[in-house]
Length: 115
Length: 114
Image (cartoon, rainbow over all chains, first blue to last red):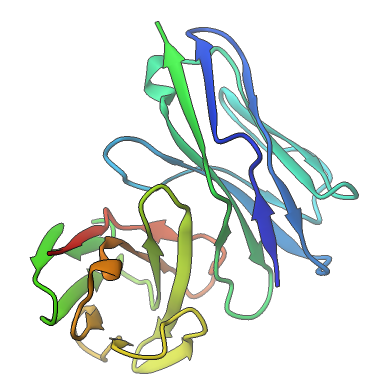
């Protein structure tokens, strides 16, 4: 079974700084998807960024980018020029490319951006 | 295009009662997923449904929990004889048939069992 591990329960940075959230996963599959979801205090789940395993190029979405290391099974999220609105729980998630395609989530990292 | 809708947003039940959680997927989406989030934890997969079919229920507790997605109407997650340990946030997600890897989440239903 696939597992996703986020080793940083909490992180805190100053506004405008850059922060990197770590995620590792375990799978025997060669094709899969990886995601970062944001859960603000409203608790709505918001997709931040996604990566397809067969693509070597790291995904980027404005201030958000990932460092995908397939051999190391690592998928970190970098947030540049952090803003107060980035304060949230961040969940890393894995999905097989075939089958039921259910999401497997990590435990989450609570990120606080301080003014 | 309205997003995934869930109701009620908050539900309070006493031990032994039944809880019914509803999920209306986005227009054109025929795949529905239910996830449960216990306090201070990540989301855990429960069940995957298509219209009138349960495709994968590997994450569903063996007793008291059931789910359906009828031909007409919303998907329903039903919890019978609720216990305090069922208190959690229950999220529904839907995906289009041609891009099942992209799941859109509803706002969740917070269930509190007294």
